Image (cartoon, rainbow, N blue to C red; front, side, top):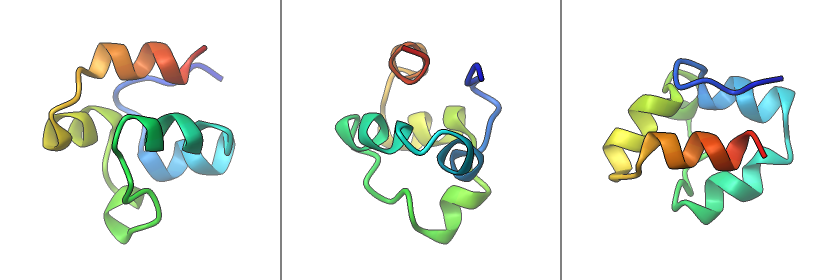
Length: 61
């Protein structure tokens, strides 16, 4: 499954649980909060000041 910037954080966690470690390493510690169920990768990166392309590369490795 290729992860895209439009995918929701909650969807990624459900379909690729091993991505949690990568998300945490980028400082996205609120992966279990309700907002993560409705927040896209792009939105999460923007809110946390993370380069979305770098995050996507890591998530898709």
